[in-house]
Amino acid sequence: MVPIEELVFVGLNGYALALDRRTGDLVWKNSDMHSGYVTLLLDGDRLIVSTNGYIYALDPLTGKTLWHNPLKGFGQGAPTALVSVRGQASASLLPQVAAEIAKAAVMAGTPATYG
Image (cartoon, rainbow, N blue to C red; front, side):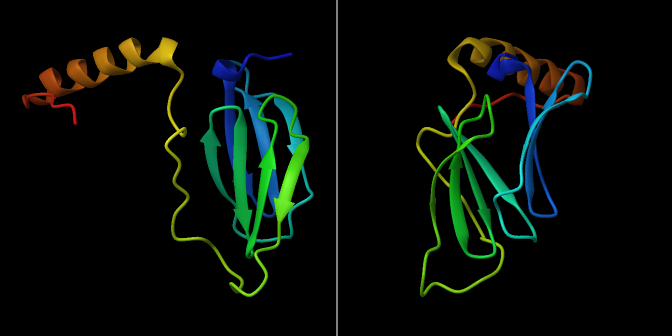
């Protein structure tokens, strides 16, 4: 099984997909969604997927649907936002991300600031 840090998630034409970030190979696909624009949020141990007024929670390692909610009465279409307090980078990657931000800021000649 590919570790979560090595996956890239893609929402496309009613599919949620995971690719191996090193090779680009398809790791898994989930076509349980209805067709349309797919929005994704990695929420800790869940990949939250929204399309056409439906919300799905997938296992990000396997693509298996853990639950879904049709959000009846809220309409159809693409969401304007998906937000979670858990939707963040892996803690082990944060120092590396901070270093890359600081490096990019130095190269651009602007100070790096963190909220």
